[in-house]
Length: 415
Ligand code: ATP
Ligand code: MG
Image (cartoon, rainbow, N blue to C red; front, side):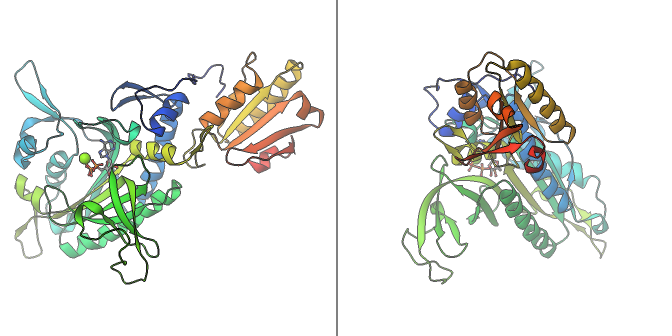
């Protein structure tokens, strides 16, 4: 993308009412624009990041055998009454229609997915099944002051699985948990899985996947030695205590953000809708269900929140909006610099490298570097009169201080 044509504008000023680092950095660097608390436009750069995160999540969900679909966000009141959510879920947005009907905006989709799937399942032979979507969710959150970490409208991956037995559920649940760890690792994050009680509808075990950050809203205790981790809300344990896994380690307390979770829903939803399947013996059974969430837009916030320096964001390569920021410094030799830069730009695109090309003619080098640091693309390639004298470009990684001269012939090999 050529910056002269791209819808991208960075800003030097920091919005006063944005208390978190991710909210400030993402606005300043031109990734998002806040419409109101907890509601954002994802600008072209930000949308690319959301899509990159979604792609990784999608690949790992497909790998556990789940089928992607897309469910509606506007729901009839009746399905939420069937499960009790209409009266019990405080974050549910309710909408009055001029027809006097009422609707809900999806805050999660068990109410849609259960009848959808079970009306197409007849016998135990049709199970197990897992479906997922990546879609917008709406929640009437009281405090939406954490940038992308807590939206009133946010992007979530939600998967739902259906099983003939608890054993089969447990098998899939373990696979899904491993897929989650893979996802967070691919995103460059270290996530810890806490064991937690399963929220308002289920007393079954659930896991919350936590990433340490001061902008998070959960307090966790985690072992320095093994992978034990627990939410402070539910535990009697205290910071400094010995790890209950007897590994010899001690527990440390930290602030964290929940980037995903997996729940055992038991048979609640099948029972609520009176929908099940016929088992081997010909009897009607309700499936054991699981639900598995990942906060896609929250992840974007957590990455910006935890991977930055005083100059801006440091995107991991898998997530970055572009791989390379090509910067032309025209100086007194604009014609040659732009012609060499245009050529390299075309070659990189041709070989499938995603490039943002700062082809602005009237912007100072200092301003271009400041913008580039703020935006945080992993590789920077500079072409100037000076580098051209050596038939080279200057290459620098965003997370390193040193730069090196690379000959124009070889630049494609290092990117
Ligand atoms: P929290 O405790 O943070 O409110 P939750 O337990 O309500 O989260 P779920 O309903 O399980 O979350 O949603 C699945 C995932 O969606 C969460 O793990 C989180 O990553 C993300 N998420 C939940 N609420 C929000 C929100 N308001 N804004 C952005 N992401 C969210
Ligand atoms: Mg919540």
